[in-house]
Image (tube, rainbow, N blue to C red):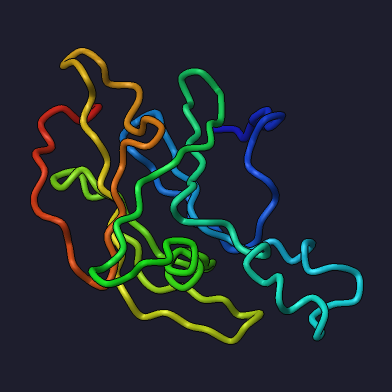
Length: 171
């Protein structure tokens, strides 16, 4: 056994407290995290606090590492706000900006389930469950790409979005 370094030229920005979730044998999904370097040299103050949304990685824009190709990609997911929510960006700020989450890939549901997390710079702590549903491959022989841009669905509020068949998952 030995450690090796992975080239990170086009990888995600540096962050603190993200969660790395294995998706099958070849892919890793990087979710969440905070970027304290974006706060600024003067720290948290009345000038910097209104920009707190820039300090956190968005759960609806995860990064995917493919070990087979040794490349990172920045993915997009569809966010379905609860009924009655009209401002999508405000909803994303309230629900999907967080760090220090726990997450696991659930093969039988073809999803990543996220629990809790925090925005400790603003003093917010979460005790909820989110689910990122992953699309199936377009063809039975296509097994390397679990996420396609804009093809995943995020649900919130502890509501899990139904069963998905896991028959076509990578080994």
